[in-house]
Structures are given as C-alpha cells and as structure tokens.
Image (cartoon, rainbow, N blue to C red; front, side, top):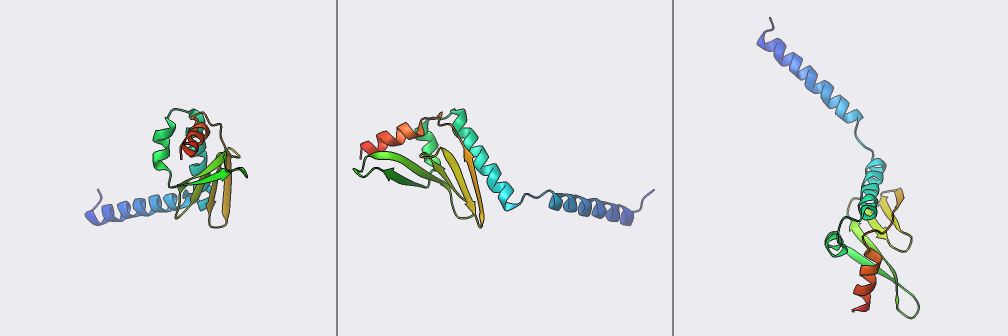
Length: 124
C-alpha cells in the first residue's frame, strides 16, 4: 500500500516524464511553418469555401499589375507577426517566412480567388 508521500512522488515522476515527452515532440519553427502553409494550400485546393468568405481572414492585399495597370495577380497576407504567410496567386504557392526559414507549398485555386480578385480590382 502506498502512502500519501509515495503517491505524490509517483505522480510527480509521471508528470515530469510526460513533460519531457512533450518537450521532445515539440515542432520546430520550420515544421510549424510547413504545417501552416500546407493547411492553407489544402484549404484553397479543396475549394469548399466561397472566396468572399475566405477573404475575411486576409490582412493585406498586394496587387500585381501589368504596365497598363490591369490586374495580373495578387499576393494575400494571411498571417503576420510571427510567421508571415502569403498566398501568391501569380505562382499559385503559399509562401511562408519565419526568421530565416522559408517554405513554399503549391495549390490549385479551386476557390476562384484569382477570378474574385480580378473582379474586385476592376471594380475599383
């Protein structure tokens, strides 16, 4: 039979062991960035959301235009501060930057973001 003190030691050892396991399994910044970019690319490729709704999470739009100022493409900032993540509609990649780490993940625009942004740009 364990005493109260032995139970405390045993539970502390279990706690410490679980903390060490959690520390070993932590993602690096590059792994987190890669996961975030992949998830964003998969969401766009899945095409399950309306582009107007998807645009609610966009922080900034960089317009890419031809010399005559007609719409060519856009870059959408979807994360900033820690990791900076841009959806680049010219190259169809999700580009992530975090410190010195850089990640690119391709996608297929099944949402219709490029068409939506072209119409939005032309309406201005």
